[in-house]
Image (cartoon, rainbow, N blue to C red; front, side, top):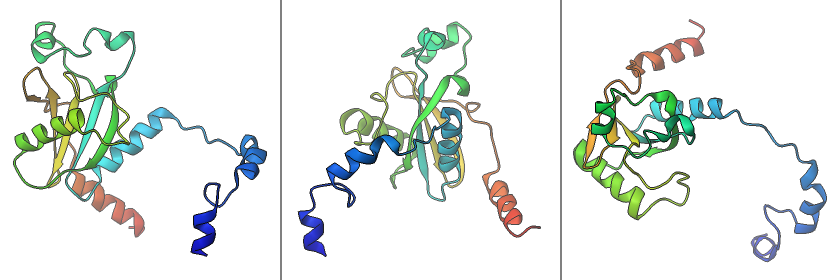
Length: 174
């Protein structure tokens, strides 16, 4: 009954005492970070709606030299942002209206001033990459000191409609 649910003092129908008794015996699934990245990226690329993804540099000594560095710094050192140095930290449906530039500006504001509660990354900053998927076309944009710089080679170009067709054919065993 609704009253029972409202008066319950535990979570998900389990009392605190019951949970304390069994919590150490509940198996924990190990999640492979690389597999998790693949799944998150697939959910972005295969989303039927216009969407965006935020990539941030992995923490570590390998990326320390380029973290928070602008595109001029990278260009002087002949460095291209590489997908392997980044983690996909967030993806969501892209807000409607406006051109790519205004959408990027809106995302920059949102992830600095009004970050979603489920966003695990740091504020959107120089060296981050925002990928936009609009009408099935993916474009990647480096967050620079002022504005964004397009990165045509960050994600490999794919025919996402062809991938969907292949999956459908597999489903029908053809």
